[in-house]
Length: 481
Image (cartoon, rainbow, N blue to C red):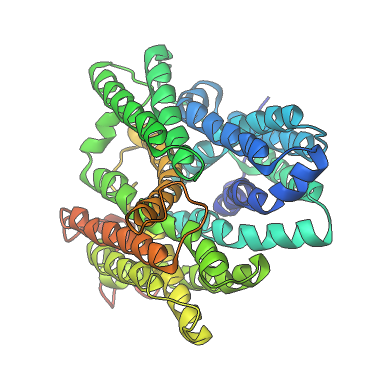
């Protein structure tokens, strides 16, 4: 059964996909603020409930690599629609859970839906957008990943305080139903050109590698867990990742096709971009802790300050395409990542005596540069990828993105623990001094700045086929939003 898709409606595709992305990314970040109330309802400690968050993340790690193969075999619309159904149904099950087992089981199901929804949604947009319009389309589907981590904690706190934790999950239902109707009406059901056999060894290796890496980074963020335990999982994940790479390069139809990394623009956005994202993603983890532990602010006051970052993220979306068209991808990557690194370092210089206006300005500019860099990377990734490589590239990009979000949090946590250890607080202490935060931000900012070296390998005309770097007088008059 196939629904007719109307070409005149195809311009809605990026907005439909962006809506589902926002639902998934918001769900990932909003839950943290509800854990204490949920733990009380389930009559357990908050640490026991973190199992639900970990289970969700690990399910994503296992199933994201297989998403491209499933979409090629069953059709992108079919898989995307079922992913929305699974995610929405799992949201209801999370909302009506009465104990830890029910909640964790529902989160695993939700992780399966999310693992298919994001990479397949991105693939649908990339396959159905001409390269001259790809910059605008990618910009549209990127904003949820940029905004949700900043807005999530504040929104979660509001819902939990004034309603109940159940609504954090139940609000997904109307969005899910609306998205499903739109997908069935508009999205074409495309399959891959050839039926590839399922690479079971690749599935096994990539699943184990990502699970070990993400579980290790998760452990690193818990102060009560020994650091050596976390490092062992991370090292095991890296070793398995190398084995997965070697297997993929030898196989004719690998589950994760690493040959896409031979495309220079894609390679730079995945490899150098991963280091950039780890450095930048440490900040949403560190800032709320700095405000609450270092400054002594309440969770709500901390959330209000973080809205400056959200405004920066959203504000930059209006100018991203125009800036790229005016200055080109290479120059924007190099200059903007430097700005981002400097303002990550600047976050580490903040103290309780810093004027509020300066705190807000620092966070706002960090938000601007974060949005610009992430949008630039997400667009440039597909500049030189052929139609035949789009499915593989979308899957690998989703794997890298999911991994670096978790590793960014872990890098921030690791920075705090290392600083605390050398300042005499011990690596597992629950208390961190203001100096510890300064060092953690210094490490994150330094990593962000060092990642700029990776962008020097880009050609000066990289991304010009997407409209990047077009000089005034040609296509610069077109809409930049």
